[in-house]
Amino acid sequence: MDHSPTPETRTAAAAAPPAPPADRYGRGDDRAADRKLRVAAAVCGVLFLGLVAWLGGSYLLRETRLNGTVPTFQTVSDTEVQLQLSVRKSDGTAGVCTVRSQGTDGAVVGQSDFRVPAAGSSYDEVVTLRTTARGTTAELLGCTPDKE
Image 1 (cartoon, rainbow, N blue to C red):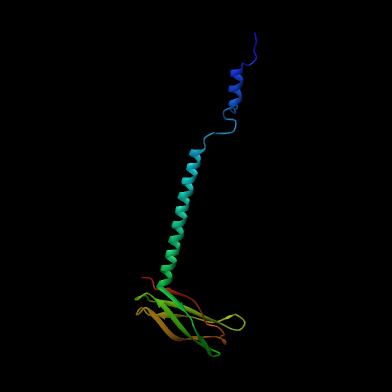
Image 2: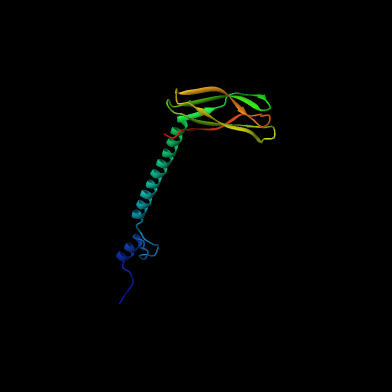
């Protein structure tokens, strides 16, 4: 009995490489897992973009309701600083703007709230800030609209 391979068996074995044993290298088909990861990543991306858009929109809406600046100021005396308060706002929006002054050492020497009337879309007024010592700055800390 001859058990040597026949010529037909030798060519068939040389043409097809042997297959690895099943489950040797993990699961063979990861397409379903990849699809789930892609869907989860897309959902997270959409939620993140929605959050950024919502935060940006609320910031812009808040800023356009009452937005102020102090373009110029002048120290009048050791107890007074005059400043120009300019506020852009929505018509019918009233509020309060807080201004402070600091001395040469950086200490706060004066701080006050100034009312902004509801009439008009802008408010531009020269106001006087009382100080406890000579003020060298005048800066706007912020403007807050009245609660509706």
